[in-house]
Image 1 (cartoon, protein in one colour):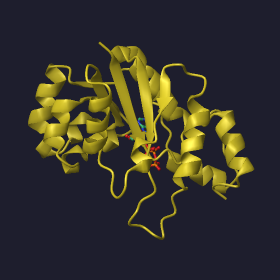
Image 2 (tube, protein in one colour):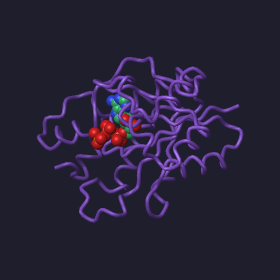
Image 3 (tube, protein in one colour):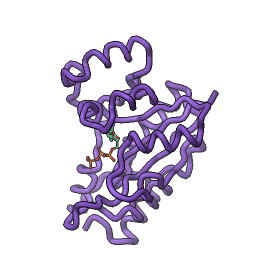
Length: 202
Ligand code: ATP
């Protein structure tokens, strides 16, 4: 049976931390594929400063090109209105009915899981793989998640990434690009070229 990782994010821009955790999860859980799902443009925020989805999608495509286990889907970009993880998971369940699905996320996202649409149903349909982010600890998990998390860790429906942390965020990358002070090794060179060619993050 196939193990499929679903990795949703804004990817504004995608960085080596995303690639690192995608690879580490694939190794540790034995994922056959990790499908990157760039978020669509926020439909309710006319003034939003987020980079258009088209650019974020192409940067993600460039970034994952060298890893055969990585794939890309526009599933979260083409749906009308708000996109919820719950709905995304239904789409992939229909597409891969025999597969075990894993939702990959950082610990900052885990801490908000109880605010997600139908989260209690969601966690019965998808396993969760968590990459801890610097400064986060499972002790800070909100009370609403305690009972589920304790049980899910025991039954391995939630797995915590064992690979070392990769302390980097898109926010830091955007700030460094604005100041023209981005260090090497934080984003793939193909993505850096694309950003330059299209004058993004100025
Ligand atoms: P931003 O700084 O704009 O909030 P981000 O770096 O968190 O962006 P997202 O595209 O929002 O990137 O992240 C997608 C998912 O990847 C989220 O679940 C996030 O927690 C996780 N993630 C991103 N970077 C890391 C990292 N360095 N370590 C662990 N998880 C990460």
